[in-house]
Each structure stands twice: as C-alpha cells, then as structure tokens.
Amino acid sequence: MNKIIISPSILSADFANLEKEVCAVKEAGAHWLHIDVMDGHFVPNITIGVPVVKSLRRVTDLILDTHLMIENPDKYIEPFVQAGADILTFHYEACKGSEDVKSVITKIKNSGIKAGISIKPKTPPEDIFPYLNEVDLVLIMTVEPGFGGQEFIHDCAMKIPKIKEQAPDGLIIQVDGGINNLTAKICTSLGANSLVAGSYIYGSKDYKKAIDSLL
Image (cartoon, rainbow, N blue to C red; front, side):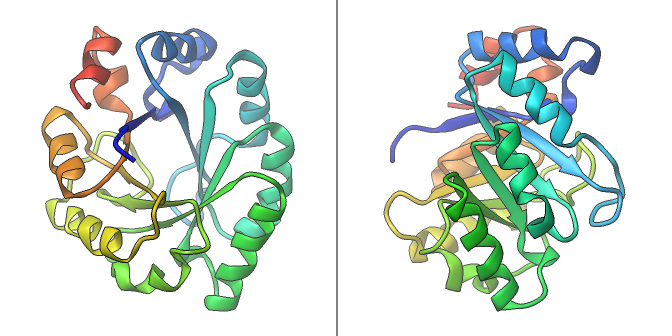
C-alpha cells in the first residue's frame, strides 16, 4: 500500500460548525475522518459518542474512522456500527486478557466493518503481535491519549517498523499524536501508511496545504 491515508481528527475542529468543518477537510483532500471517543474513565477527558457519529454519517461519505478510547469497548460496538462507523479501533489496554481482545475483534468483524487495535505509548508493540493477522488496522499512539495538541513522542515511532515487520500485507499502520509536516515524514519513512492529525490541520489557515504537507 503506497497511498498515505490522511484522517483529520475532529477533536480539534470547531464543534459549533462541525458539518462545515467536515466538508472543508474533505474538499481539502482528507481520505477519512477520525473520531475520538473518550469516556472520562479510560482517558481523563470526555468527548463525543454515538449521536455525533450518527449525525456525521448523515452529512458525509468520508470513512468514519472511530477511535474508542473507552473502557468495556465490547458494550459499544453495536451502537457505533448502527450509527454508521466504518472502522472501530479499540485499545488493547482496555481489554482483560487475550480472550477479551479476540472477542472484541470478532464482534467488530462480525458486524461487517473494519477492526482496529490501538496501543498507548508505554505498551510494547510485541503485546499485539498475536492479533496482527486478525485486525485491519493498528493504531500507534505517539502521545498519551486523552487530549489534542500534545508533543510527538519520538520513541513511539520506533514501534512502526517492528509492527510492519510482523504485519500481513494490507495491514493499515496508523499513527496518532503530534503529527505535523515533520513528524509525518518520520512515520511514513518507518512504514506508517495512515496519519491522524488534528490541531495541525484544523489549526491551519489552509487545510489543503496542511494535508498536502503530510503526504
């Protein structure tokens, strides 16, 4: 996969004008839309949930790349699928052992959408090696999940080649956290093929220029 998938995070968008912001990044060349779902328990912040995903589905045909930073992700798979999510990425750390991880993956896949697994900065990539053949996407966090605008943790980028070496053909390796025109090049040079960027895109005066600079 040579194409780099750009998935702007709406966490940094103007929520008072969300439909306009979504349309703007699509016109600027975004491939997906990254939706950060936080519950105030797994991460120390509360953001959005099923109703917003449902509303977004009505106003865009972009892939809804939904990142569940929540406890008990298995309980929320069906509602997010019904709301229109195209990808559900859950956190490895939110599960209680390998059987729980496999159960969540199976439930997502059986719902007919793509399954992703994410790891926090302190989680070794080796922990998710057993699941690489079962998921469609791996999301490597290069900041501590919970808030936008954090600084890129360079050591986390070194997880990319380790995962790529073990990954089956076609696996999407996504990176989220502190992505800008410089850190994007680091990640893609190491093997990432999808980038999440929030403040870098939505904080820019020219969304197209910002997106193009990540490619």
